[in-house]
Length: 336
Image (tube, rainbow, N blue to C red; front, side, top):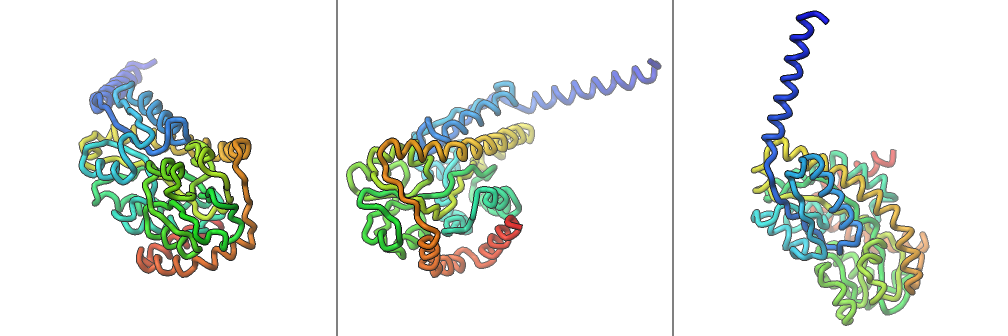
C-alpha cells in the first residue's frame, strides 16, 4: 500500500470517527412521554413499545420513550392540548379530533372512501397526507407518520343492523366530530359524541346503545362484554396520527429528530402489519365471545352511500372543495 493511500485512508477514518462522535454529542439523554388511548394489550400498545425499542436502539438508550396507554395521560383532545402547550412530548391519536385545529382533516371521516388498505396507505403516505401534516406546524403540533386504526364497523345492544333502517333510534356513540354526527343522524341513529376513554362505561351503563370502531379495537377494548351485535359495514377507514409537541420538537437536534422519524416509520410499518394480521383473528375471537355478526350486503352498503351523499357534499364545501378534490384525485391515482 502506498504512503499516499495510507494517508488518505487514515484521514477518512478520522473523518468518520469525528462525524460519529459529533452525532453522539448531538443526542442528549431525554425522557419522552408517549400517550395513547387504547389499553396496553392492543395494536396501539404493541406498536408504541416497538417504537420505544427502535428509538432506544438508534440512540444507544439516550432517547427513552415511556409509553402510557389506556388514556392515562388524557383523551386524544386533552393530549393534543398538552402537546400544544409543551406539557407532553408525543402521542398517537385519531385524526378525527384534529378537525377543530385543522379543518381539512375532516375529509378522512367521509364514509366509503377507500376500497382497501393499500389505497389508504398510498394516500396517507403520499403528497396528500404529508400536505395535511404540514398544516399542523402552525398549530403547535408536528405530524410524523400515520398509523392504522382501520375500517370501522358497528356494534350495538338493541338488534342486528343489516340495513340502514335498522339504525333508526339507536343511541350510537360516534367520534367527536360533526361529520360522524351528521352521517349517522342522516341514517336514522341518535348519534352521541363522546371521548373514547368514556365509551366502555357508557356502553356498560346503557348511556349509549352502541358504537363504531374497527374489529381489532372492539376486541382489544373488550366491547364484547357489553355489546351483543356486530355489523360489518366498513363504513369509514380511520387513520391514527403520531404527533409531537412543536415546542419540544424544535428544541431537538436534527440528529434526534431524524432518529425519531426513522423509528416512527418503522413503527408505522409494524403497526399496520400487526393490525391487518389481527383483524381476522379478532373477528373469530368476537364470535367465540358470543357476539352475533352480521355481514352487510353490498347492495345495502350502496343504499347507505346514497343516503349519506348530501353529508359528503355539505362537508366538502366546509372543509374546502380543493382539499376534497385533491383527496379524490389521490384515491384515483392510488387505484391506477
